[in-house]
Amino acid sequence: MEDRDSVGIIDWEMAGFVPRDWIRTKFRICHAMDFDFPGHDGERLGERLEWRRRVQLRLGEEGFHEVSEAYMARLQSTVRDG
Image 1 (spheres, rainbow, N blue to C red):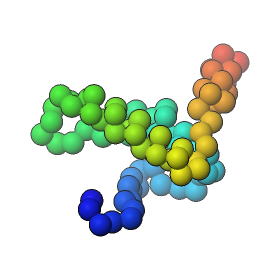
Image 2: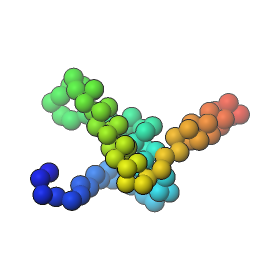
Image 3: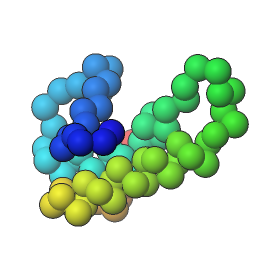
Image 4: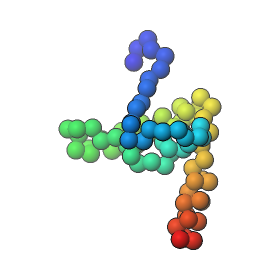
């Protein structure tokens, strides 16, 4: 991506309005962001995990907060309390 300022990542399946903090949080918690590209048969899982980690770290550098701990606590209480 030489000589470019930005990159867009679009996944229409997950499109919608979300709070700003959810953008980075999604990369922290969602394994659906570990994209599996055709022809790789899962052999590059480490690279996919590293990609997701690097994206969420970069979002943090750009001022995006994450709320993964609060999200997981809420999810666990919902499951526990039924």
